[in-house]
Length: 274
Image 1: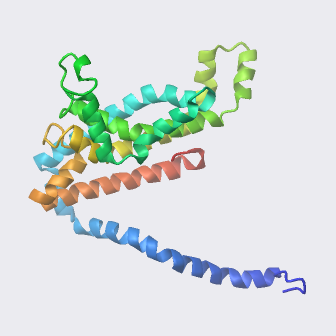
Image 2 (image 1 turned 90 degrees about the vertical axis):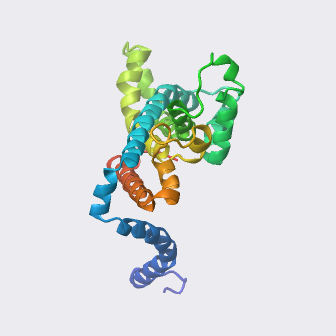
Image 3 (image 1 turned 180 degrees about the vertical axis):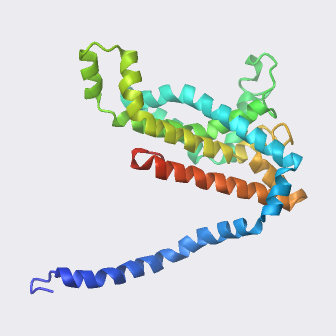
């Protein structure tokens, strides 16, 4: 160290490994706290157990229902969420902060509260019930999809909005000067530049919808073959057949890991999510 108290490069190099090890040791408890339960879950399932369970009717129905409803939920979110994302990213208007907070609400709300809110809105005696023309929504597949959209849509809207906001308006202005129409600008410039954020938002929305439980069980119920998704089958499996619960939990764990690997690896830093 110099008389002025400054650390010389060689002294800094000698201290760096020790600091790294100290930081690693300090981080180890939380890392192990997350890793050990996940590893224990994976080690509990054998290949033969997995193969047997995948042939189970209840498992097959829960998986099929989960994948079908989540794909529909993602499609609905993309269609109706993209205009909202563009509005939040590009327009300034009175009440924008309130709209932004409203979009975030399903993220911070307890899932059970979301389920009760949906039931009171779309139930037969709910606020919208008299206007549905006798259409039954609660405890149907439609209710499953609505619950998934409600809790997962904010992930797409926030990600897509961040992507739209990152595109410089100078590109759009230059294209307009060259004679491009507004739809052409959106199709040829804005959407391609926003694509990583859109794709990332879709993936995260699908993963969140796939794991939805609380709002679904209140608004759609837990009926095998009709509204019982994979998380709901896990819940009932603990009471009836632990093997089914463990296998479905492992499947969801693997799917979640693959989703995160796709988002963080393939899309990299171009993606902005919550």
